[in-house]
Amino acid sequence: MPMWSKILLAIFLVIMIVKLWPAAKHMMKHGPKGSADDWKAALLPIAAVVGFVIFLILMVRG
Image (cartoon, rainbow, N blue to C red; front, side, top):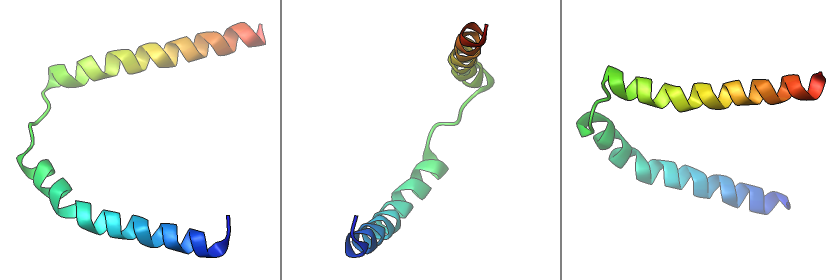
């Protein structure tokens, strides 16, 4: 990738961050808050995927 396209991409990303910052700040302030049940529901699939990946690694090594 040429240097000018990297610079152009970096400028574009900075502009996007600047344009989206107020909306993200508003959403963080006024958005719904997560409860303990929401966190449990989110952690269960993540733990299942991590366990499955560990299982696959152990199967390949063994």
